[in-house]
Length: 230
Image (cartoon, rainbow, N blue to C red; front, side):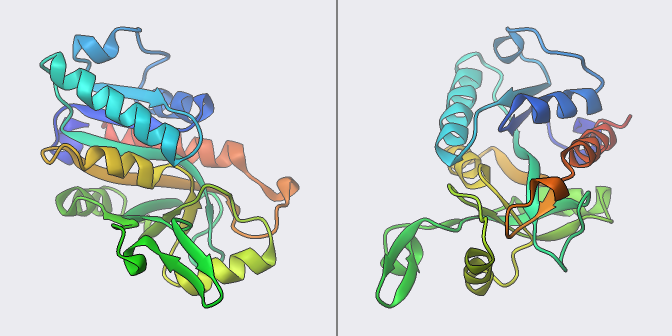
């Protein structure tokens, strides 16, 4: 990945083992030794768990341990499968996040939803590193670029889909970890952050029969094969 993106040591954070396995397969690895983090492996892939809290906690732990071991990470990628917004990205497609947005972080009231930005309590947005974003767009010219939403509750009805699209009309995908990973990465200014997603289903009413998880995992594997120059 150093040759493709121009970065050094890389940490890839997924939610679940199936995503981690796809990333490792793309890198040409069947597994990683337990001491890969402390031993300074050039790429470390971790399944942090579902949701922004788990993702942020594990990312922070890995980044801190790497610094103490004398081999800090230069790049952190949040990676995995996601729901895509119909008409913006196809199932099986690849998404490169321009920013990761905590879409449900804020307050609901009589006048509607207010984000933490609007409330004055911080930010619900983390932009991808500009240089990294350019490199990813060159590497994946077919990828759809745009904001990727981070939610703690996946959108599962037509009504909630309509609401979230009104709030974020330019969003291309919805997942559950990117903002958490970005929040942890931002604690280390020398570490670049980005989010890479492949699409398994359309955002909206839950229809498991329409999900294409194997296809999305295959796209994820192929993306990391490309990043590793394989």
